[in-house]
Amino acid sequence: MRRIVVDASVVSKWVIQEPLTDKALKIREKSASEELELIAPSVMLYDFCHILSRHPAKTPEDIERDLNAVLQFNIRLEDVRDPEFLRKAVEVAKSTKLTFIEASYVALSERYGCPLVTADSKLAERLKDKIEVIELKDWKD
Image (tube, rainbow, N blue to C red):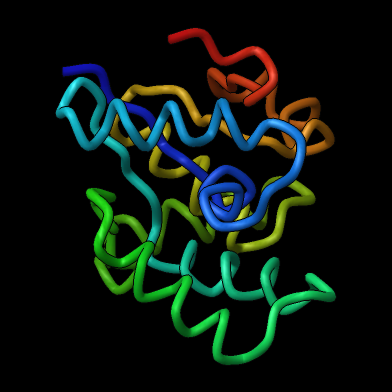
């Protein structure tokens, strides 16, 4: 089974209709049919809620419902309390201009030797020389 790290910019498109939602939903479908393993740091949930909280149409009730829905999907969440993972994410954050959350995606990509899929083109550009990054717009089934 192919494995990828997904960030909140991809996962949020599962519950917000916007450009590239169709591609994000295809990733979710491939995970549901066990063709694709999705991995994310546990802090992705905070990142996800942050994105939704900035959406003008999302109420607190919507965000709670959407978070509960995402928790039902097949995403392997890596706990940042794992000392090895935490250490690596902090090292990446300190050696780059990435936030801890962004660095945690990088740390997972490196740990599992798999690409990060993101809808954030600025993040993809900043990471292209560090890890394999696939922009959601370039995702191929």
